[in-house]
Length: 345
Ligand code: AN7
Image (cartoon, rainbow, N blue to C red):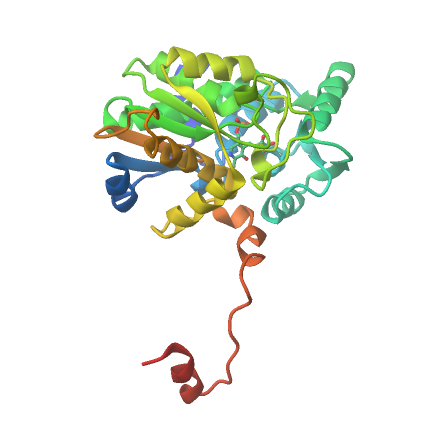
């Protein structure tokens, strides 16, 4: 069977206009990796949906193939987004593929190096904004209202359509929905898409655990956060565009949205890597949330259940978070005796 991207595979289930011209990098079809060790500790059947294995290293490619395909079909020449990094890299890649100009606005100094490098490598015009992601998004909304530049943030409904395909894939693999779906929540496009996807597919509904970083947790606090801060820069967002829909998804699914600390996020990142799956900090928030809930009395009931945790971006997106926290590796002369003396017998 030849491999296909998400529009080829599920396009008939997506609400896209007739003018859509598919632009694909063969995104999607990401693995559901069993996590037997951590699963055993938590008492559940645990899988990671590893979205870091998409073409640009994050889940954003699912929605971006849809948004760019629609934009190019309607004759757009330039696309723009605000981004904490992954959307920028994805928009840049798909725009490059389509021959469109891409402009990306990022919060100054707060984008992980692998994402910035991606956006530049794919040829986007990168502009740093002195402010937060939320400030950058406001600028993007204004410019796309006043000019023909096409907006490809997840306010764009076609992004949500494309991202629904992750829910379809999970249902196809299990022939039904898992009991719990855990995922990080930033601008809240992804949680909105999963819930819409599960509802549409009619193969069962999971309970949803959405997880924010404690320093950027407007949906837990119940109000916007003016100066969001977290080590998980991908979800350093204080005014989620689809916040209402995220709360709805949590409530309708009989789930919830919680916050975890930066320490819990980094610890979860290490726990996943110790079982062979390296994800970026924001992507570890879902696992951090599951661990926090499993460890407390009034937490979610995951025991004996099938749990899918969505890991949204690859660890290579943010290598410095790891390298900065360790001393550089030892240096030895190129001699056998030195090697043996360093590693022991
Ligand atoms: C790795 O790239 O908002 O709740 O501008 O990169 O759908 O926003 C990234 C978000 C989770 C949160 N995990 O998803 C951007 C951006 C990773 C992310 C999220 C993001 P949403």
